[in-house]
Length: 297
Ligand code: NDP
Image 1 (tube, rainbow, N blue to C red):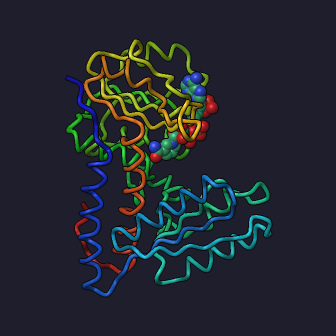
Image 2 (cartoon, rainbow, N blue to C red):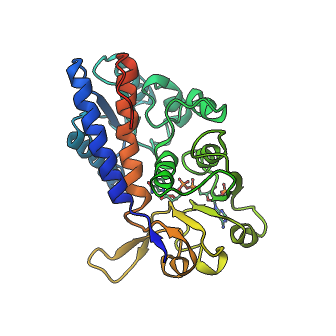
């Protein structure tokens, strides 16, 4: 029997625990605050930001939303970040990517105070993760790690294959699985568009994390019997639905489910965990900045 890994349920439990810790912080007069910064009129970015704000409200985190005119000079965004860095009621800062072409993304990521960098993209936080001393773990791979733990998937000694080497998913995922720490100690192979014989690598994997952004790219015939399959992909494909499209993962769910021991669906797998981990990181940021111990979940 294949286990379907229920990301909605694990994320809901985590949000309950986060809400509980937010109340504990309130006893010390602290209300965690997350600032979202949007410098775009892209409807998808607008939706992501409003979802993040709604998530904050649900657990008692103060959502602060700032919009910067996409035509404004880059300096306007950098100064907005400086202002948020200086505010005591803002514990986490998230600049919704992508930013316009005239803004240097690397400058944006470096400008955020590492103690408020709840995305975990500042080079200091990337370095800490690689060095095995993470502060804020990037939300998607951290969410995957929590899912694996929630379903007692043993990572220690496992052969893990991560398909994708992006800075936000593939690389930090590989680093987390590699850490000499709980949820790590795997033997990790990172695959990308130049990898040769991807299929042989997948066939040998106990854990597959698919994050290539290619619809239904990994199918059951490529997987080892009993493997744990984590599908990070979210791809819009044309479909005969009211919206004219549907969302599918990087894994061909039906064929993979026949072979896998455990598998995440899309939607309802990794996505909800990514959102919950942002709240988690904001909670952690607030407790650190006010030096209140809250026994993080
Ligand atoms: P990127 O496009 O930044 O990275 C894709 C990676 O896949 C690259 O490293 C690329 O290799 C690799 N790749 C492309 N083609 C192949 C191939 N044929 N074989 C092996 N590897 C290949 O994507 P992201 O990491 O940002 O996102 C990946 C997916 O995850 C997307 O569908 C995205 O929507 C989704 N996502 C989901 C989230 C969630 O919460 N569930 C959060 C973030 C992303 P190369 O480096 O050589 O180009």
